[in-house]
Image (cartoon, rainbow, N blue to C red; front, side, top):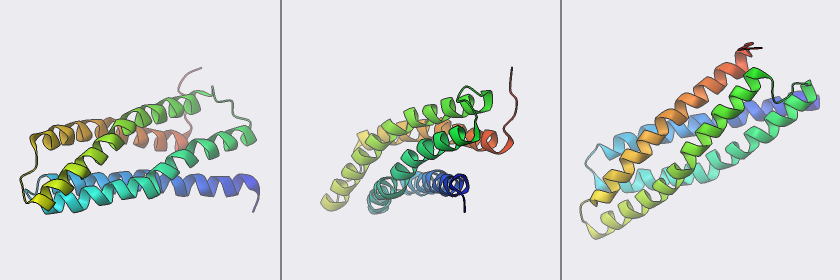
Length: 158
């Protein structure tokens, strides 16, 4: 296997981990937050933080490294319209994701404490959950658009 194909395989695999873990985590925490069960919120939020630590963060680092290496090897300038748009959308997703990480850590700590003390979830948890969700939508849509651009490589402009 040549270097380009090896990078492409790693790039595709890391994109699946990045978006798949992100979507799966969002799905479970979204519904745990609506369950009314502090215990469920505690377990799921802890696992979401773990999944982001083990899978999403490393994949999020691998993506631009392998993508830039493949672009260079293929002779595509980063200013190529579909590629530049992909990079901008990836950056947008990342700018949404960074506060989501902080929110998840805080939500997991609040849920853990509420479950351990047998108390209801604090109101701050609900506010954080709303922000977490609101930031997740544009990040997910941006990543779907990146997938489209990566597959189709449309001319866009120029």
